Image 1 (tube, one colour):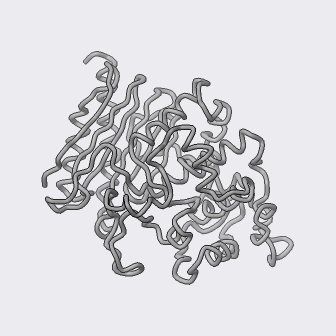
Image 2: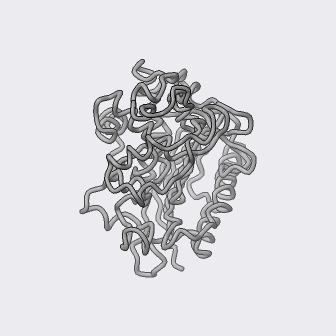
Length: 376
C-alpha cells in the first residue's frame, strides 16, 4: 500500500517535525488495514505540526489524504461543538448546570409519573453521561424526521437514577443539543458557527458540508443496510442523519488545522489567554464528575486505565474519541495536544485496529516531544 505521506508544519526544538516513530505506527496501521488514511496534528512548546498519510480508500488510485483533508469527526462533535457551546453559555450565565432538563424540554417529563426519575435529570447529568438514559438506541429505524427523532428521545425510559451510574450516552447529547437550541433560540449549527467557529477562525469546520465538497472528504462506509449507498460527505451516524446532519452527539466535519486552533484555545484558556473561555470554566468542565470509576468530566473525557491517550498524558488531561477513528487529547499540565483523524470505518465498520494504534501513536508522539525537550 502506497501511503503517499504528505506534511506541513511549523516547528521549534520542543516540537519535532518528523515524529518518525509515530509516523511508522500509522503507516503500519494503514498497511494492516486499520484505516486507509489519516491526518494528525501536534501542539507542543507553542509550535504546531500537521502531517498526513495514506489515501481515502484502499485503492491505489484513491485521492491522497493531505494535512487539510476534512473528515467526519463523529463524537468529537460532543466536545468541539456541543460541550464548547455549553461552556460558553455557562460562562455567560445563560446555562445553569443544575437546570432540570424538563424545564427546557417539557416533553421529557410530560406524561411521566409525578415521582418519575426523569424529573431529576439536570443538564450536568447529560454532560457527565450520568442521566440514566440509555447509551445508544437505533431510533432512526422507526423515526423518519427530526420531530419524530426528538419525540423518541424524549420518551425513552431511564435505565438508572440520575447520577447513579455513568453510561456514555448519545441520546443524552442529542437532548443536550436541543436544550442548547432552547437557550439560544437558534439552530445549534448556526449558533455554534457564529459564537465559536467564526471567532476561532475554524474555516473548514461545519455540519452538513456542501455537496461540492463531498468528493474531497474521505468516505466512511459502503452502507448496504440503511441508506444503500457510499457515505461520503454526509454524517455516518444514522441518528444524526435522521436529524438532518445536525445533532449534539455527531455530525461535525473538520480537519486537523481547525481542530488544532480549537485545542490551542483550550490551552490558552488554561493560562488565562483564551479568546472565548476562562480558566475557571475550563477547570470546572474538565473536572471528573463521578460516580467512582467514571472517567467523565462535563462533556470531556479524562485519561483512565488503558486509555486511548496512552501512558504519558497527565491526570490534568481532557479529550474525546470519535467512532470514525478520530481522537483529540489535551494535556493541560504539559501544554501538549494531539489530534488524530481517520476513517477507520471504511468500508464496513469492522476494523478494530484503531484500539491498539491510538495509545501506541500517542506514546510515540509524547516520547518524541520529551526527547526533544531534554535534548536527547
